[in-house]
Image 1 (cartoon, one colour):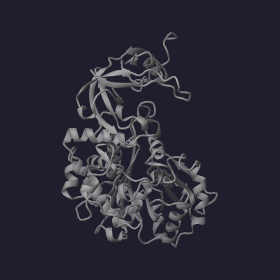
Image 2: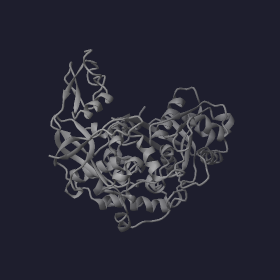
Image 3: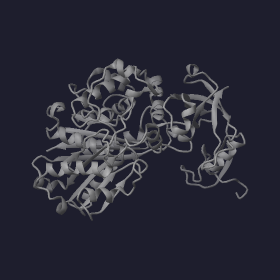
Image 4: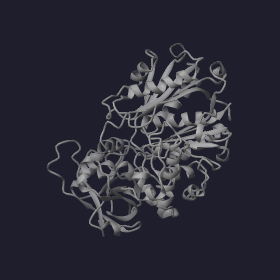
Amino acid sequence: MSEEAPFTIEQFYKYVEQGKLMGGRCKKCGTIYLPPRPLCTKCFSKDFEWVEISPKGKLLTYTIIHVAPVQFQSMAPYAVGIVQLENGLKIPGMIRDVEHEKIEIGMELQVGFEKPSATASQWPQWPRYYFKPV
Amino acid sequence: MKGKPLVSIISAGLSKFGKLEGLYGREIFAEAAKEAFDRCPNLDPKKDIQALFVGHMGESYEHQGHTGATLADWAGLLHIPATRTETACASSGAALRAGIFAVLSGLYDVVMVGGVEKMTNRTTPEVTEFLAMASDFPFEQWHGITFPGLYALMATAHMHEYGTTEEQLAMVAVKNHHNGYLNPKAHMQKEITLEKALSSRMIAWPLKLYDCSLITDGASCLIITKPELAKKYTDTPVHIIGSGQASDSIGIYERESFTSLIAAKIAAKQAYEMAGVTPKDIDVAEVHDCFTIAEIIAYEDLGFCKTGEGGRLIESGETTLEGNLPVNTSGGLKAKGHPVGATGTAQAYEIYLQLTGQADKRQVKDARIGLTHNVGGSGATAAVHIFRRE
């Protein structure tokens, strides 16, 4: 598996930078991890392959953050939610490009990809994915 | 084993909770320790207390880690083995368990457990950031999800799935503020109305200011011993008869349910089975109401009502001081305050007072069996303990 990129969170965000949502599939038991993990926590195998995950899904729950941590204060109020993707996996993220009043549980959303910030000088230098209406 | 005391509490102490301006964590802990020592004249702290376990969540607040040794020294217990436990907001629930194990191992006869947090020296955005460290960094914090945000995600899901209302959430705040009003050590000693709670400013929709627990300074401690030695120290020991702890995914997005904390359910099952009691036997409970929705979910996870009926239980009045199962008689995290590392043993302190008839204006009549439910973070840790009076 030397040609495979490591199954790490760091690598997950490198794919996000390329506009791809990638998960790690255990070659032994087939479980897909999003984010990827280096150890299958179902069967303890370390043999994985990368799979591209469909970026479409449904909103399971959400909130509107009014009081934000220091680095997000300029964006508040902003919406965040948990989306269940078509393959059943769930990921959290910001919900953008939709009025807060129109957000509802069950609505269809898709993953969008932010351009990486060139100004970040500290760890971590991860780009962000987010959710937007289909 | 069922119902047999694991250890016995012979004394307990609690500092004043609040914005304790100019006081450092170690000084606040000394206040709690002093109360516990004074309460138990038969105890010689320097001679009798053999080990200390303390919960403390974060070194960011005071630039101070290595809390175990620091607190042992400032409590007058220099040189005993002293260890800090960290499971976020359940840190002292875990300290209590560590103390129970230490006594059960046979190595020690008398152990002190407790917790501390100094928080109000920091700004709200700083505290928001420090608390969020107890949640998943690469996917939750990185995407701007705050601590209230995580519980708001649970609240939205609970409202959608079971029809729980913002009014029901606010009723938890009104009840706990009423209890806090009766507790001289509570951070907030004022009653609030439903209207006031509902019209308070938004923190993370649907959670408003009065749905959130307080940023508080405080410390708590208990002194525990082998049950057979308890009478040497006090005529009114409180026995711990059940203890459970469990963990879950750090990220709530990886969990099966957003309307229940599986770790709390598992910990409760362990504690109930060990104690040989059922939810119906509980006379008084302190539950982890870091947010109002958390108390409603706790009712369900602890079996005080059926799944989805937590909102209706608060509405029924059964969990008020006058009800059949008073919950958070201290004022809870909501009104007594939530110095995170101190909370687990502060809950046990309230149950100790209740079961020894020392809870004054908020005394639950004939309370015999009590329960504490202490949650770390958004539910990746939970510790449940069951107590019985002599």
